[in-house]
Amino acid sequence: MSDIANMKENRKLNFLVLILILTLILLEVLRPKPIDWNTTFSKEDKIPYGNFILYDLLPTIFPEQGIETSYQPIYNQLQDSTLNSEKQNYLFINWNFDLDELDEEALLEFVMEGNNVFIATHFLSEQLADTLNLKVNRLGSFDFFGDEKSPDTIAFNFVHPDLKSDSAYFLKKYIADDYFEEFDTLHTTILGVNGHDEANFIRTTFGEGSFYLHSNPIAFTNYNMVNNNNAEYVEKALSYLPVLPTYWDEYYNVGRQELQTPLRYLLSNDALRWALYISLIGLLLFILFEAKRKQRIIPVIQPVSNTSLEFTKTVGLLYYEHGDHKNLAEKKITYFLDFLRTRYFIRSIEYDTAFYEKIASKSGVDLLTVKLLFQKIITIRTKSDVLQEDLLEINQAMDNFYEQIQ
Image (cartoon, rainbow, N blue to C red; front, side, top):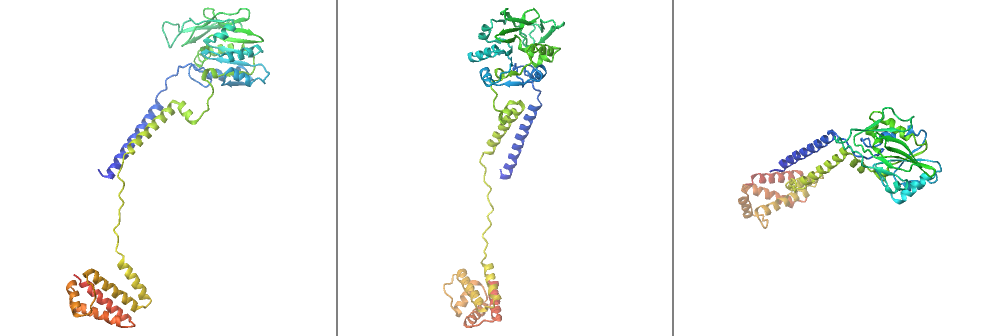
């Protein structure tokens, strides 16, 4: 197969690979994105169980107060804010609220000094629960994506008559009906109950501050806040907290905030991540197909041209223009005699009849033409001054000789 045919085949293959990559990228971009039912509780997530809506409403719940997001453990966050003597709120909404000893001590000290902590979680830290004399019943019904054996909805409501709703509030899908089974009645106030009048929202005083504890964080997620009047329930629940500067915790949901780089952004988006993967695969395929050895293009080498004649003409023209006929005639004679030596393998030049006959025999030129040519050569070489007419005559004689060569 020729090089041109190989190049055409490679172009076709590269074109097909490019079309395949573009098609896969287009399919991935146009593919309906499945609903993400993960429970992230993050303020950045608009998925059903994220907290984008709630975080967006915090400025209306705590008007004219600063809302600060914490991306570090409790101990670090509170250490960084020790210079702030103003009372504050700290909000935690997550699936599992598990603290180490250092963070727990920092949180208890924070509340003891007169601050307020709101915690909505299914699994409260055992150490913190023991400290606050709490026991959570986790044997309630779970509805995981429509289990027919579990109830579709669970009612929630408040105890205070000014906040209690006549129609109650109902939460749907992925619901855990946890409640506080035991608590310190001396320091605890029931703020909300479920449909069985079991406490699921309480306030526990600790020192000069208070813990506000809710046993169902799902109630505060995007999915449930857009259903019926559940956003009203969330707003009422948080209205128990005083209007103060507020920390919103993200660390116990998503961990420490990491540096956002272009590559991290690409990998965080499904469509962009697949586009990156497909591009890398396409590049790898291109390298594999293009890496096979190909014959180099053979350059066209032009044959070496004989420029002796052109050179001689140029030099002759130079001497002719300067009027040095003698010198020019001598050079033409020298060139002619050298031609005879190389063409007919003649060792020496003789000016006699035998030599003339030998030249005529080897060249096929008429003997008379040969004799006339050599007579003019002898005449030129014996003259001290050569006229233009002499130069033209010997040149004509040489041209006649060259024309008769066989």
